[in-house]
Image 1 (cartoon, rainbow, N blue to C red):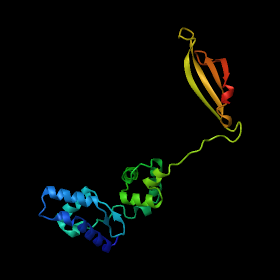
Image 2 (spheres, rainbow, N blue to C red):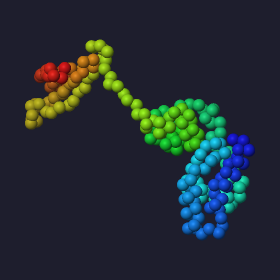
Image 3 (tube, rainbow, N blue to C red):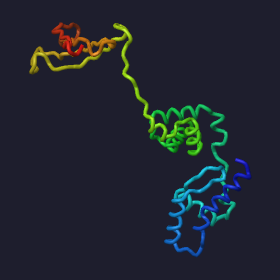
Image 4 (tube, rainbow, N blue to C red):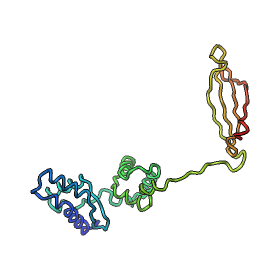
Length: 220
């Protein structure tokens, strides 16, 4: 940001707070004026239209009382050049937004700082994401639909799982062992598959096949 723009922003900030800077206002009156200012839109020198929170307006008022219009000039940013030097930061910011579309730019900037020790302004993160089409409104308006996956041919991919079942014989007594329920499914023709019940001896070194149950024809 060049010196001319910094001066224009200082004058813009003064124009925003001027009404609330009137020394004749009581605290109550000033609060009402600040709320009215916060509710309006303001044309920024960069051509955008912005709204400012009450906290921002109060901060500018304090700065103006302490140092006049010059105190309203934006300070040099701590992240100047950091995004250019470390372009991977933006890639990570984009991944964080895609991971959780509701995650705010402030949250993303905080995560980047705690991971890399680099402070990136919230506005920089927000602007970069918006230019890439990753702003929250767009992501929420167009939810991504994921199709159902299925293997292209039989025996290309099998899916297995095991569940530790009840004691057999049941109720548990001397000689009982845990039953295991095995699921083996060909992904191409799911839910076709077989359920295998296997009962193992107590020492776990040997097993004894107990039963085989195929899925009903209606589910194949």
